[in-house]
Length: 140
Image (tube, rainbow, N blue to C red; front, side):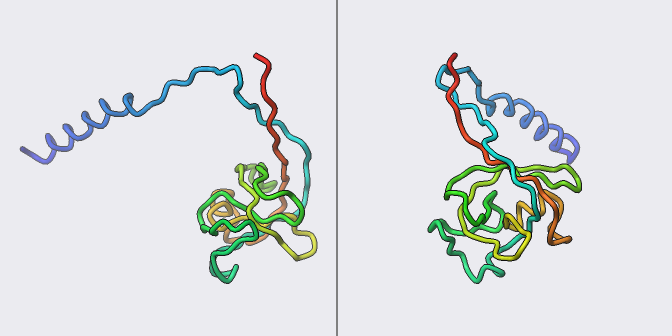
């Protein structure tokens, strides 16, 4: 079998398998809707296993450099927040699993993976909007 024919067969097989991986979404009457409970503005920085001095977090969960998690001074552990980079408009929903930052003006520390996805890992510190998310159950 030639290389081109082999590549074609692999591509065709992948195309045929993709629809079988999709899940069907049906609306449920008890589906939760995320709402914005409060908004904070300030600066975000990032941290990692190396800068944190290990993998322990205040919540007891293991710190992973690429997980969508963050540290906040006062929000309850497990709180979901949407962090928006005010410089480029990129945003990501992260979960609070740690405490900090303890530097004046900074309101949240994101993992380095989240900082990379938000486009400020090289810059280090960036102005952000933090939206605290809550869930309400729909009445449908």
